[in-house]
Image (cartoon, rainbow over all chains, first blue to last red; front, top):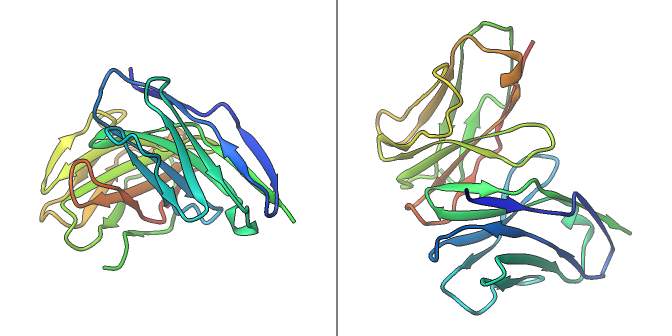
Length: 112
Length: 113
């Protein structure tokens, strides 16, 4: 079965510091996509970053970057220069095509 | 439209009643998805449409749940004989294709009393 595991239910970071959120997944597929979504209290799921499994280069979007280790089936999210607006639930998602399979989420708090 | 829209934002109903939740996808997106998110959990897949047809309905929990997309745009998720366990946020997403990025609506919070 394809599963996604986020082992950190809660994380905290000081404003302007860096934090890394962990995600592992299980699949026998070789072609797939991975995503990080952010869900603030408004409950709207917002795309943070996308990674294609066939690409060795790690995706980057401004302050957000990933560490994608395909052999280890690991997909962590690094947030640099954390801002108060980064506080939210973060979900890792595996996408073989069609449906997304989500992890349980990590709640990130940002301290001023 | 500019983004995925869902109506209503909130719905309160009584056990045993019928409810309909609506999703209006991003204009031109051929794929539409429904997910259910229980409190403190990640979203769980319900059903996926490609055009007018349901390409994957493996996530529908039982035959009380049904969804349609008759013209390949707006979709309606229908829940019959609602139960308290159906209380959750129902999220809709759309994408331009099978492996493309999914963009989410704001969700409908359903409360069954």
